[in-house]
Image 1 (cartoon, helix red, strand yellow):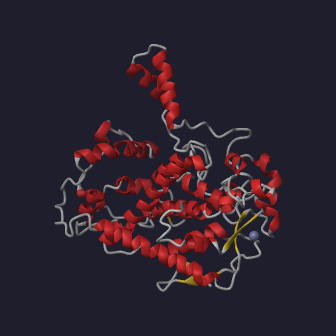
Image 2 (spheres, protein in one colour):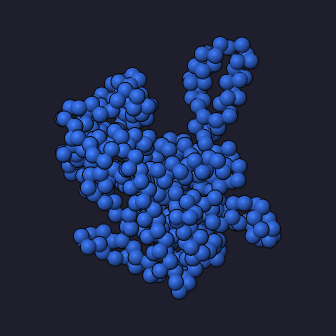
Image 3 (cartoon, rainbow, N blue to C red):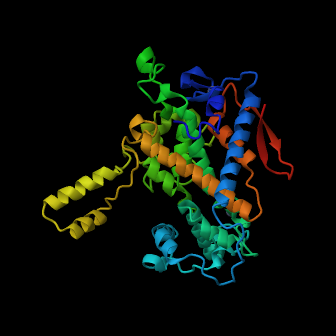
Length: 440
Ligand SMILES: [Zn+2]
Ligand SMILES: [Zn+2]
């Protein structure tokens, strides 16, 4: 069940990759490795082009579901209606809490501004440590727009984009200061794209997730191959669920799917909390516990251990209740004779909400998780398409070629690997500055 199998040539991409264990390559990393076949570059490029064409086609098709033209709204026109405000309120509250906002507001009041102004605040470069001081409101406005993308409230977005002074483009790759700390809305589609490509690609290797597969280790008697041991999977989990200092919103849907609690990882960039535990991996991390992204700590240890890396010693990942667990607990509380409201209150106080989407924890490709996986992949795809639609509405193009190429390189290239950088060239873009990988 790779997603959109007729439009995206997943098997063409996977035919150029091979599951390789840590002890099988100089990089010492378990990952899908390029096979270095003669037509590899051409066919990876073909995959990327087909992928992008599919985004464009879907975004064109989605756009047609709305009026072709919107009248520019007046400067204080309300564009978020009551229904939408209610719908997105819990997420905005969570964002405000994360930003330590004063007077968060109750229910739908949490949205102080529902006018088109949300789309009009300009991004400006700010000095170090001053970002939230100078651009607090602008940043919150961006979070509201990003929330609308996550909820698929495209009608509201299209109305906002019709204003002549729409300033969304400037926020695309916004950073906190010159030193980095990304917080632009490119993160919204980058996370979705990473998860989407990673899971679809790994799905093409059933021997790594399906014990019933004819080539699985259960049948061949080989050592178990597990997709969760790969660098690309661990990189994806960390990238999609890791903390962002300000723009944490972009990770919410992914944390829910992968079952990762909010406070699980340290700050962005891998930092090893538990140094003792890590000494045996010292070639990959400095004595201070820092590690670079590449090779980073991905693809070195089994997933369970990977998940514990940034936790204090012996700390297990906290239990994330599954949907039916919550129902079970509620049932038990009723049986104790508690009135229904009280049972809800108790569960609220205990924070016992169904936060987990996967029946079988930490194993998205497990056959029993098929339904949740399929929903999640559809959702990731929709996010990608919505971002493209918003971009085109304000007359800009998302550089998909670069975005998809970089995503593949980050997942599949490894420092010290015998194929490192040999399967692509890094080329400068026409407008200077950014290197975009080209596969050859
Ligand atoms: Zn700085
Ligand atoms: Zn290697």
